[in-house]
Amino acid sequence: MGDGKQARSEEFQSFMVGRWPRLMRTAFLLTGEQHAAEDLVQSTLEQVYVAWRRVGSADDPEAYVRRVMINLHARKHRRRLKEFLAPRDDSGLVHEVADTGDRIAQADDRSALLEALAQLPPRQREAVVLRYWEDLTETQTAEAMGCSVGTVKSNAAKGITKLRAIPGLAGMVTHGGRK
Image (tube, rainbow, N blue to C red; front, side):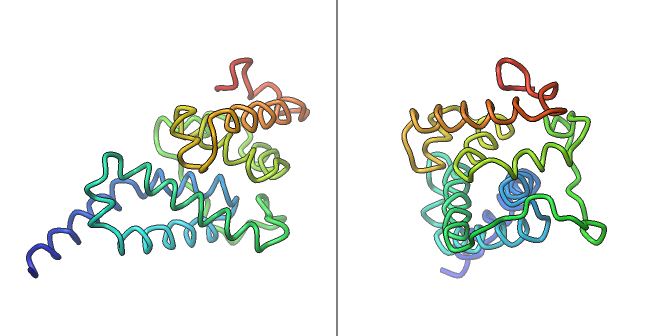
């Protein structure tokens, strides 16, 4: 019995180490703060670890983890009136290091992008981040957000439209919505 528990712990650790950079990037885009992103990922992984027997045997454990993260973020946002995606003084923060192939890393001005994301309502921000930076399908995004595909399409379209309307950011957002 102890061997099974040890094997599950090792499987979870392997999963966590392999997904940490992507989870952190998603959490950072949702929260806009390094420390808040770390807290969100850690809280997510705590919940996932408790249910790892079920999660690890799921068809798509990563989708399950994304759903837990979105739910935790949504719960926190409902309790909190305002999120600050772009702190005024971020000199003391350790900035996210983008992994190779990260589409956001290609943007010329990350702070402009974060400020623009901060202007989006939470559901539009979630839809834009999951669809265009996490490159999820509409169905996967809907599953992660706990809504219909139509809601994802609507929120993503409205979010991209708002981003395109921001001076200086319009050049970063292509006509197809993807950079």
